[in-house]
Image 1: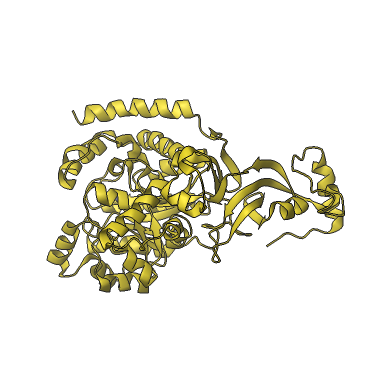
Image 2 (image 1 turned 90 degrees about the horizontal axis):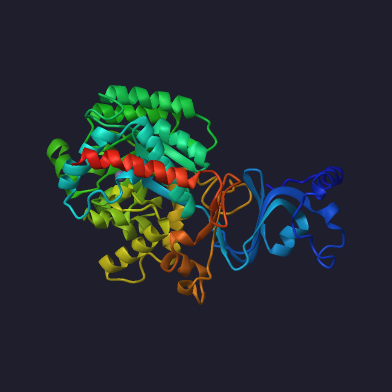
Length: 478
Ligand SMILES: [Zn+2]
């Protein structure tokens, strides 16, 4: 995918940008020609870091550099090779730091950051019925969703998440906040059988969804999606209507699946089948379906998910905090199910830090299976990058650092006391790194945060608006 220019055009580009270029010119020893005739102009070079590509070969360059032209990665190579061929209009020196694909959060409800810590340590139904549902009924509005998503985007940019899959109400407001922040989203407008904040009936929800899809179709950062809430909160007819919308517009289909034992009981009572069996029996699966949780899934159901190419979002922190159960992640990995990693909403986690999600995923399955070899650091990191991209059907353009892919990457510092010494950067990313260690975040070639300074959002304003919105939440649950 390397763009090859004739010598004339290289000269023209080099002359045009020569004065402004800040790239380190190659040393004469490395190149017999002067930089102005050999280096072609690119928008960004992230130079001299420990580059973890997450490509199929698991390539790590230590050190390595990444060259980005506009939205795309054009080369990943040694610093000398990149400097010889490319000159970045912006150059980020990542010496001693880790450069890796942006993290992909495959399941969240971004605006729910405004309910963070509202109620903890409760049984699921009490938590939902006493706190979350009343708070949502009284507070969810377009403005609330916009304010919440800005806060979530700020947290994600700061902790290295570049793409998130979302299911909520007023999803068009989520989409607008995503565009403002410059982050990437697979955004599912929620459809649910009972009256929701943005739709009185599921029919209205379906109409809203269709309008949402047509409004954001072809958007650079937003991939619109259909999000039927779950098999137990929707009739069979509505589930199939949601699937049909996903087929009609060729968009992803997002659903909560087999999260709790209660859901399995309801499925058995209503349909005499387990949740995955039931959805398979009605041919629910669309080409790009992502099922969140997949906790109470039998071996046969794992095989069904694999056979139908359904992606699964594993959400270890939410599953542990709500005591929902343990997803059969080793079985998913053995079966080759497309497996991503998610945080779930911040009301049940309580943050959007994907480094913590990776660490908890690894720990949880080692403990449950009595085997420290399951869910290795590399497997956890894969879930949070390429695995998430595959689960969302976006693996052709995202999930790894390779020429031709979109330039979504992060730079992570690795020099703190808790990261010293470093023998294996992959081990450190999963077992010793926190979201706060991310210093630079790039999405679609645009630098959203550099050296800890967020460029796209007014941080103080975002936090102030969120605190103000929390006042409404406090009143709603009094
Ligand atoms: Zn959820």
